[in-house]
Length: 122
Image 1 (tube, rainbow, N blue to C red):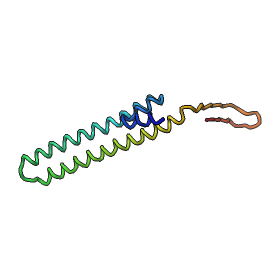
Image 2 (tube, rainbow, N blue to C red):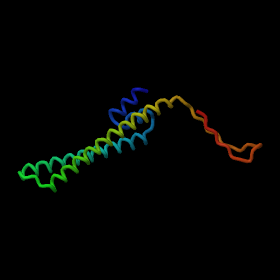
Image 3 (cartoon, one colour):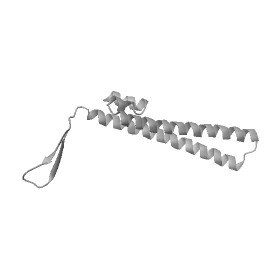
Image 4 (cartoon, rainbow, N blue to C red):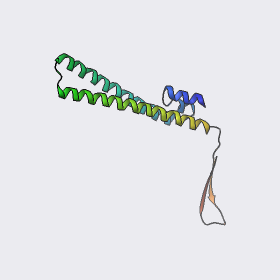
């Protein structure tokens, strides 16, 4: 149980894969990779803008505003990477607890009641 949580802390989706949930693993891994690429892109923009400001020698307010926006974009995406990782860890931990449960589904008509009944047992 703890190992699946640790796996998702290392790479979101890895714990879900260990729990036998490949679609969930792919989804969480893709979301995390998207945020990581966005953070990298925003950091590259920030570095380029910083070089432009340093090369100009004079601080252009428009460039400074763009630089601040790039920093904000990068920081937001880093926070979202952390949130995705935390969600993946909690999800892997909960799913690991339910691996040993057998769920049984039954559906049918009961002769004494004119309704359809669906039962799920954990």
